[in-house]
Length: 402
Image (cartoon, rainbow, N blue to C red):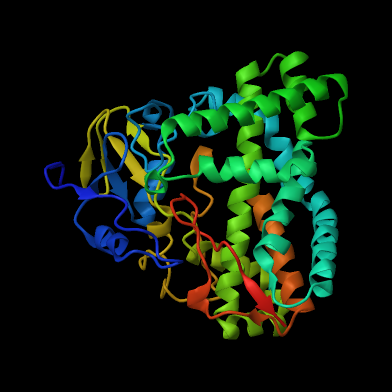
């Protein structure tokens, strides 16, 4: 057992390089015990990298998300999470909030959105066909699809999409972006103020959307506070838009730089569902681990004694490449039969919008390879520009031709 905090590594291990997984994760995964790390903000933490340990930690109520939140939370982002968010609560408060919105994200509800999502994708690709080549697929497809879907789900005007994009880009900034705490607080206040205005509109004009559900849960059923209502809307809007948008971009970049994979999906469309799961496992969407927990008592985890009050940081990226779980983990295999990836986390904080993201990725991927069988990058792969200083990886532009 190793619980000596004297040897501490700086984390993140390095600046993200496109979709390359830093070798530091493999070293941490094969090391004895957990790896002690120091992040740009907050206290030191134990980095959890093995698949079994990540799942064990995420499913163990002795590791509290709520107790990790605050100025001393180990994090790469200057932004300090609010304590009234679904992502920062423990049961029973987390359970109460999740029940309010869970029905909107059920598998049955998401499947009712599939035809509308298909229509949106078809319309966007119709517009792509009319454009002069090359076309930037990030702005023509990857960014608008999740924005349109989440706006319809939540009840937010799509006309305000540029404002959302600017707000979310700043709120996803890491220490390397140079965005200060004051700017982050200003942007957060702007977004929350905007959502508060929409709430007032829904009070006067209820509709068949999630904002109306939240208003009813607060005003009629008294199941939410005002702050919780705004925080839930905030979480759904940002998570439902930017995370999915850049994952779509990462999917497309991977397929366009691997013609063998693109061709296989084009020739075998039945593989799309499996391909989506495999790409979710393989692609490192985040630039670093986040959403730490703190131990509420001494707990042995992965050969390390984590003492009460110490923080642990789960790396889904490292867990998804664990060779003890995934055969040949660095290879993309669309027919992988055993794929228990943790890209949507695990336990009570398993991503509420997982099924929505899956559906959008399936529709976009399947439709694109079918309608544009000759799709290719219009620039060399190393000329594709990437996001910098953000917790999310993703291309800024994807110029394509066909």
